[in-house]
Length: 121
Image 1 (cartoon, helix red, strand yellow):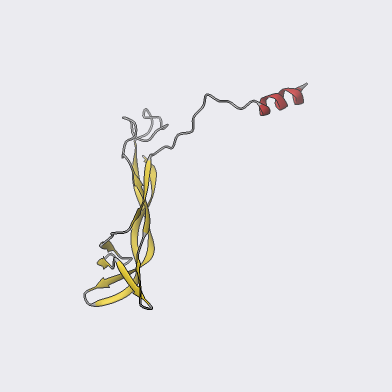
Image 2 (cartoon, rainbow, N blue to C red):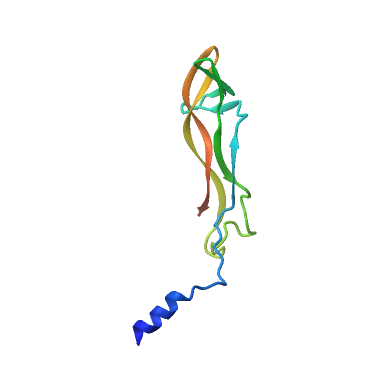
C-alpha cells in the first residue's frame, strides 16, 4: 500500500509552486570596459582592442550583478525578517585581461562582477 501511494505522488508533480531566486541578478556581455581594479588593488586601463598576430580582437567580459539590493521590502526573498536582516550584494572574481598601467601593457587579473548573493545578519 505504501509503495502505491509514493508512486502516485512521484508521478504527479506539484504545479502551483514557483521557483524564485533569493536575489534577482542581471547578466550582460561587456565589450567596452575601459578601467578596472587589478588584483593588487590598482586602477588600470583595460585595452578595448587587442592586436595579436596582426588581427584585432575585442575583450569581452561576462558580468553578473544584482538587479536590486532589496527585491522585497524586507531584504532578500524568502528570508524571515522577524529574525534576520538581509540584503543582496554583488560578488566579484578576477579574470585575465590585457591592460595598461602607465606605458606598460601587460596581462593582469582584473576584478569583475560575477554573482548576486544574499547577505544575512
